[in-house]
Amino acid sequence: MQPGERTRSSESPAAAIGESIADAIPHHVAIIMDGNRRWARAHGVSEAEGHSAGVQAVRRVVVRAVERGVGVLSLYAFSRENWGRAPEEVRALFDLLRSAILSETDELASQGVRVQLLGRLDELPDETRASILHGLDATREGDRLLLNVAFNYSGRSEIVDAVRRLADERLPAEAIDEAALAGRLYTAGIPDPDLLLRTGGEQRLSNFLIWQAAYAELCFTDVLWPDFGAAQFDAALAEYARRTRRFGR
Image (cartoon, rainbow, N blue to C red; front, side, top):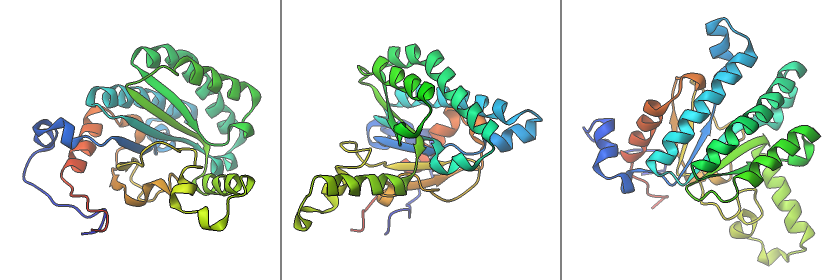
């Protein structure tokens, strides 16, 4: 059986989680948060309001991940390709990130959540970068959940940056292997995702964690991200629990 194939049981999602939380819960869950703009159009509101609704979904999922004992949660918030969107939407996303950091940092810290950024921080506006650094510093003691926020992120750029680090270190060719490259990625030292979930009905990785997701279980849902919550998160965990992972064996 190859990764991504599954074995199914007749148990309900709730039973699959309840049977053995320790065995059922993936350590690292990665999510491509898709559907904010479509949600906004469906509700007759602005795209900025759709993105704001998406922040509320982030809050719900972070709380649930902590409750379920997930160790690492990685969220795809803004890709380097997103710079191609309308300038006003990009500015709105930066403003939303800053306001979310200011409003959520204390709550994240109280929940034991440590925030880490994945992406090219140096390419962001100064004000946005300063807000991010504040959030990283304020949550540095968190020990219950590592929250990776992929912002100004690209999986291919991440690999390029890792190769550049190897070149800067002048490693001999025979010393360069998968472990050496993985150790120079933004996620160095973090276990690869066990479960990668995408909302909004699309079924592709969109350049997210393309190295790390080589053996992740993939789960897709039609639910738009602003409508995603604890019940949908639990359903994804239950789907993961029903699968048998063999890693090519």
